[in-house]
Image 1 (cartoon, rainbow, N blue to C red):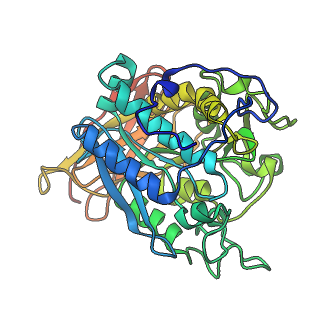
Image 2 (cartoon, one colour):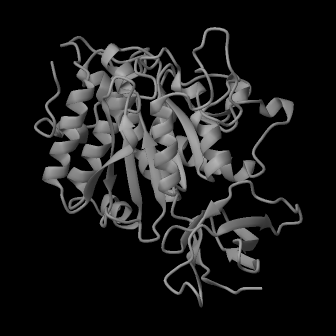
Length: 406
């Protein structure tokens, strides 16, 4: 039976805890009828109509799949027309069309944020102080066919340009970014600066951190691995995520978190591309072993992840932020690169390189500590700011900058 959007929203509010072996909260009942791509679009239109002051709809890049289906995102913010310097979060479902529960998770979270905006102080605070962008389904052709791959037979999570490799079957694409869906995500993510993101899957229950292309056990980790792990655990340690009986077990796993390459190595993943090429910390989050077959099962997956989603979005707001201006550009300098050097004796230069937006705003996620920041753009002198302090893991330090010419 098709779950009616909003009419049955009380189910989203309920905490229905069933026990079963597939992490989906199954019990006998009517088979759940997953949303089609067309129904997802209709749902987004309905949300936009019901909550016009806090939502906006956008095309994702070129906005079309191989078969011409629209790829759309919904923005949820108190000012959805612009980030206004707020931390920007991107959440994506349905990169594998057969993993339908990831789409339903995004739908229910959209419902939860919009419905509770004027009812729940925590939700209102997040919506008012974050720029939340949700792409319910990146692979609509795959969703329509209940198939992992897009209509060209390509696994989109092997088609991104960082560490891309071909394979014997062509499932990684003829080249990096050969597919319109991955091209759309790249275009969208380059024209919108995101600071934190997550992509949702099924097939297991765990949080998969960067990097996928090689393993931590072989010495390949992000330079800012401590920061990455703290954000991963912000997700898994919140709510009841770790209570899922299908939680993956591994010697390389801690608190539901595992390095991607320690789980299994892949090339051309979205999270590695996002981290290395856009400066956005991305996680791959597996939310269920399989697609639940009942309403209760789908609801249970949402229940396991709801508080985690809220905690993850909240954590995106911490670190250092500000605005970069100059005498020539008093309204803000665009595309200034901000590099972080850790002032803790390690001498580590951060590998998350963020940029200012079109109005000169920037946000750099960081934990507690002292940092040396360097602001750099061609045509201006490098501007170092040593000893910038973030007092706690839940602090936001403001550091405005004025660039000068050589």
